[in-house]
Image: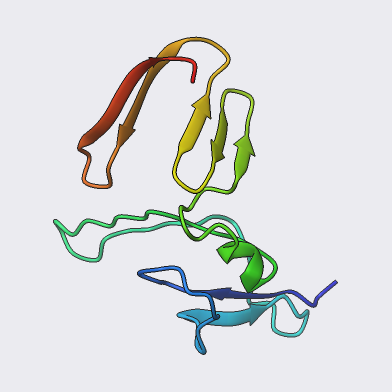
Length: 119
């Protein structure tokens, strides 16, 4: 109780070593300070026409826990109720419970790969 510390880092690439200074924080939930009130995360442009592209958000209790899969941004295996994502050193495998259209897009919105199937 009352011992959490939160820092926000804004990076253009994942780094093996934690940067010396976070963009924001560290904030604490110490009862006397009370500066952490988590309710949501919002990104907004400060000027009309400004675009914000977020290509990843990582949350962890240690720096090592958030960089463990930095090479691809995908952990070795991720499963939810609809799909399973697995990677090796050269491939990403997506497995769905039934045959569906699978489309993979680049960050610029361009279609990179499309296949109908369940893997």
